[in-house]
Length: 262
Image 1: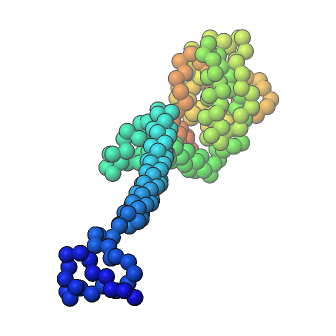
Image 2: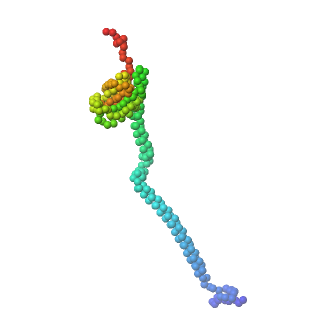
Image 3: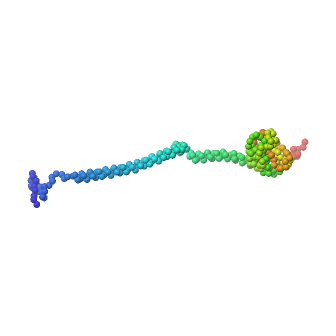
């Protein structure tokens, strides 16, 4: 192995062994640069791909959310009721719900409807109580009286309406029709109660239902009586009024001892 000494160098300062001259310049870094460049490109590509994926993901969710929002807007705009409830939703914390409002309205309506029904029930109870007292005094009960309701006026539907009310008070309803031609527009008072020769008590009980009714007897042989509605008829007596009239009818007449002697 030979010893080589580069020119301009003292041999004793450096000792070089080998069979070639040493490279005195910097080593070539092209390979390292290439590797760094390739690595940088790979890293950039990875970052770009990840960014695209993130954009797609979040962009898709945003589109879906926008689609849902548009769908909801279309749904609320489709009907006026939905639109009204949607616009009123900020005040829902203080305003009652539609169901609660309708429930309150229906409750108020049912309460208003139940008040007349309760009053009517109480009135009918007063009539039934008076009827029971009259029956103990020997007067016939309404359930044992058959009434033919005849309309002698030009007002239509009057006989049917009156018959329905009498049925509620316990009377048995027979014929409901217009009065015979001989009676049309001939009954000037509110009503006439027509019965047979032995129907006096029945006529008086039925007469409590119409204030001012006139009792008329004919030659019939049946126990049924006719209530002929006249031109001055406005309405039946209320159950309370009829009960008061029946109570007075059933009351015994005062005796001579009670009135004293002259």
